[in-house]
Image (tube, rainbow, N blue to C red; front, side):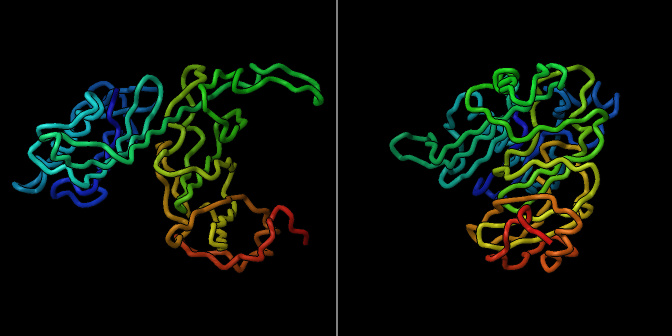
Length: 302
């Protein structure tokens, strides 16, 4: 079990949403891989050694205590005999274990009847894995045939679903991952290329928010996002900088009001985008325009 990332609020004197990220995201040299990094899965590297640097009383010890807290939870699923208050601590722990990336969230409470031991509430855990295979592994059939059942063909685990499939011969182009929180990630498709023919890989996309759409583009296009509070925005994907890390959280594209979420994302043809040009934005993030009576762009006729 490997800790990848932790986000904490109300932990001692840490700022809310303090993040410690142990995943190496920059370009890795051969020397980096040999001496400084550990590859725990295909393309997923963590630092072998880390250090906190700062002045006295800058929070170095608190950062170490936060990591110690997470390791106790992952290793023993308990937290006791600490010299700080557990009350109200909120944790989001992302870790890797046996081929899966997990996200565990919880809120800690102090219980006077349990001495110096924390209790856990509002617990949630999620796991993700992705698959890569060649079309030649599927049986060629007639159009009228049922074909292969993909979950069985790829040995899906129970509860796993298909998000999207992409056909490529040279790994050119980009994947766009759209999330409910209004963020969009742009990942080069070659980030999924492996040296060996592997079927299962980890860390296909970020687990920090619910995914709305995963869309492949061969070049920059115009995309529309629509929200639950009847707003729409159109933006050029050239505004997004590509990130080589597949689990990047992306950048804010649509500014949302409280409780509103992005519900739909789609690539528009140039003709459709021009017909809906009042929803275009020149920069991101943007709130978009009211779209209560906007029909589905797929159904527009010019």
